[in-house]
Amino acid sequence: MEFLEITGGKKLNGEIAVPGSSDAALAMLSAALLTDEKCIFENVPQTGKVETLLEILREIDAEVCREKNTVEISAAGVDSKKLKNCAAARNLKTAILLSGPLLARFGEVEIPREKSNPLILENKIFAPALETLGAEILQNDDEKFVAKFSRETFAHRRLLFSEASIVGTENTALFCAARADEAEIFFASADPRVRHFLEMLQEMGANISGIGTHFLKIRGKNKLRGGRFKIPADPIYAGFFTIAGIATGGNLKIKNVDHAALFPLYTALKKTGAEFEIEENLIKISPTRKKLEPVGKIHTAVFPGFPTDLQSPLGVLLTQCDGISKIFETLFPNRLVYLWELEKMGAKVEILNTHQAKIFGGKKLHAAEVSGWGFASEPAMILAGMIAEGKSLVFPDNFVENNFENFLENLQILGAEISQRN
Image 1 (cartoon, rainbow, N blue to C red):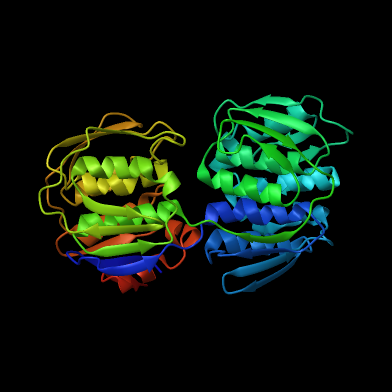
Image 2 (spheres, rainbow, N blue to C red):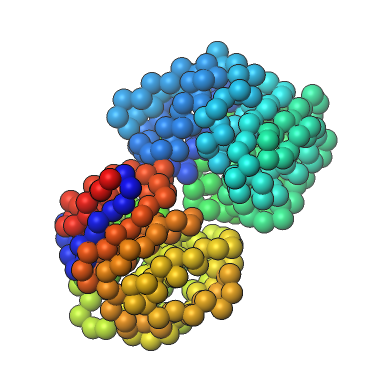
């Protein structure tokens, strides 16, 4: 697929069910490496990065069987040494999640890397955490990550993270869960995705207190058990379709919604005057009967702050709000690049710096050729094409394919006019 052709002005009507979260699946599937027993996972999304992880597991001799959205993994015969020559590991930014369970189980791990992998190069959480616990980091650069752990007990049992990193918390918990020792983690992530993951580790036999807070106490076991687990619904997917329903003025019902991570979005949408109802595991969206209002300021932050992955879709909606809104992206640089693309479509914006911008709403968007390149920009530009007048061409960067199951298909089912062109 080289580009998407999108005809704007089509309202989204109907209902969809939110699939499992790819990011949650990566951590939970990696936990299968902690045990010799079979792990069965339900609601596993069929996305690019989940399939890459399953390919990695197969290459290190895990038995993997997928039947639609159910995946069975048996890691009894895993050979961790095969990971160092695994080409697929270079293509998965969060392959570092394999370091925690493999280091705990085998005492050593080597993961190849791509030089362009920003998550691994910039993450300042997982390696220092492992070192504090007593691991020896032999190499940690743009070529590979190599570590060993040969101690009976942790060197230190208390960790203080410099930020509430989701991946850092997940990887450290994976390591601690499989060691018969106790660790305390201060400033851990309290994200609902982490909560689901930690509850899985509890079911496998780890003793964990403080789930859902920034302080965790984990007492692991050398031998964890398998079981049957369910991947939670993707809140970013639900959030995007909620924004899209409001932006297109449709009647939309979104099922299988985990509301916990979305209350900051709901608060922002209430400020705009959008009409929607929240029920148990359900969102109902109705056409807004008056002009949408600006939100004042959106400030992204770790949970329970506004989710950074919904910042760009909301930014598109703000172009249709009658007034000035401000965006302050605190977590990552260069997440405002989509605003330059929106300017090609007639939006009026002012980018103050790499983290802050103003959006002057009330401007109708018109069709244009735009790029979806830039992390999390692709869904936003698809939405922009859906509300613009005329036919837009959006050049994707595979973000949607790698992260979301049946994303374009669900938009088409609801009435969006989107064609994939080569």
